Image (cartoon, rainbow, N blue to C red):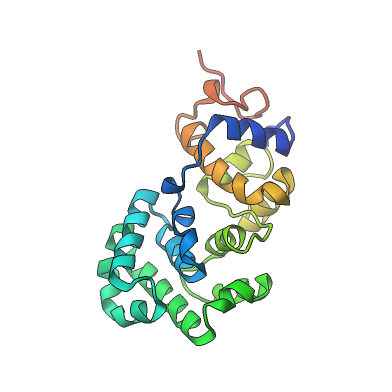
Length: 224
């Protein structure tokens, strides 16, 4: 690694928050939060490997078709794929949503709200197509559990900041970012990193000269 970012997490959080805007319309999980735990998990599954515009559109199509009621989603059967087609990866997401729906119908939606976080994570991880990021977003956004969900932006930024080595595991990155920002900031910091990665710390042609952390980042490239 080139070294570690030379500013503490709370300061980095403040600088990023001053430089980017997090709009609920651009984050599928925030868009679905009002609809309860089952709908939120479905929305997060839809957002996998999809931009938020498409996943929110698919979510709203599903709402119109089923009212986001588990029994109605299950009744769709093979037609679910057509309803959520705008989100892409139709087969994988359909299978995951159906498995999640059956779990909720068996245990009750309240299980998602009251099960101990470790138990719930272990149960949801049994569902093919539901991984740690999906679960951590749910735990952070809905259950307010201090976990740090890691997406492609967080992974890239954590490595560029020198918080983890290249190729670090999901768990390593999650722990490093949680420690850096602090548990009380983890949920908001997750979304801020996404907005920051989209605007400044892009995968290609990062805007280092305009970055609010350019003077602290070990990977910053100063361009004329």
